[in-house]
Length: 170
Image (cartoon, rainbow, N blue to C red):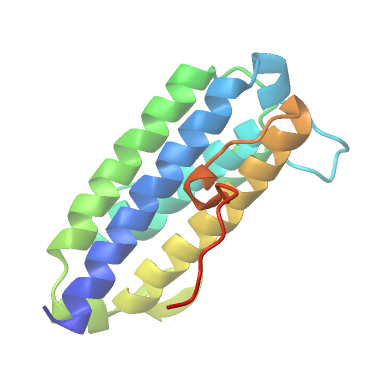
């Protein structure tokens, strides 16, 4: 397997994993919690989900996928409700599915081509890397906010918990 195909497969898999984790988090929150803000300079979980949906659509689906699209980035952050959990997660899942299909279809030409997105000139590799990194950052924020709002552990790493048994060296 080539480095290129490993990078693309891993990138698509991480986006799906993060999307799953966001869905778990949103599923634990009430509508009020989804839109809760500690202050005006903070984003609610709902804003972050809308933002991730817009970001992936713009950077992957529109740019790398060569599809038409418009984005109102400010609206993603200005929203104070009005979008339910189911609708939000459905839109995120749809765009992640489209993005992972596009990522899986990328070839060397499209990965090395330059794109202009949000006034940045970036290669296709940089686009994929940016989106996965950006998605990871906001997924972490959503997980943290969900823990704070619910007082519960998401248990994404429960398989790493010690069983109380001590391993002995050979």
